[in-house]
Structure formats: structure tokens, C-alpha cells
Length: 142
Figure 1: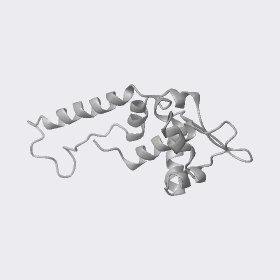
Figure 2: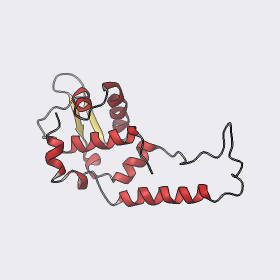
Figure 3: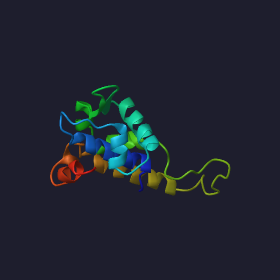
Figure 4: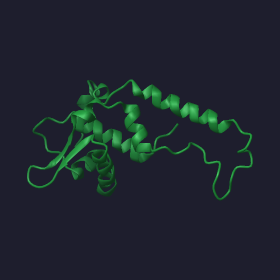
């Protein structure tokens, strides 16, 4: 299974914010630079993370991004599900529906595999994936 770039960036952003010092100011622009993506793309990711209650964003002097307590404790599986959405791995309907869709077992098998993928990530929290040695690497991003 492959995650979208949006989800990948969301996970990286949360990991970086999880290791930030309490007095460290990280802006959306700085975070975009640190993970080598455009500001516009990172802004969309940060907006979604705020909606999920994982990231807090403050404007103005002394503003910036920080991870919330909820953000530290959420499972990677839950976060990936929220960022990916509920889309199917394969699309059997639409403008050009699959001729096998009525008798095919592949769609169900792929859904089970997707559920297993996310379930395997449910055991890990953001805090779990930001300990040493990755913490050192995350802190060195500039």
C-alpha cells in the first residue's frame, strides 16, 4: 500500500513538532523548508492537522505551530486513516466501471489488506516514533 504525499507530509510534520523544544518557534514556512516542500502544500497539511486537534497554530508575535497532547498520543494508524480518507484502493465504479465488479473478490481482499495495514500502525503512537535515534535527526532538520 502506498500513502499519499499529503499523508506522508502530515506524519513528518507531526514528528518534527513532537520533538520541538517548548521555547522553539516553528512556523509553517520553517516546517515546509525543513521537510523540503512548498509552503502552500504544508499550509494545507497544517490546516488538516489543526482540524484533527493534533496541531495548535498561533498567529502573530510569538506564534507558531506546536503539537497538542492529543497529537502526541494518537496512533499512527488513526492519523494515517484521517489524512488518507476513506477512499477505496481500487475504483470499480465510475465512468468506466470494471466489467468484473459483480463477481470479483479482489476488492474485498484489498480492503482487508488495507485494514490490516492500518491496524499494524495502530500500536504505535507519535511519541513512539519520535524517540532516539530519530529524534536527533528530526532536531537537525534546518
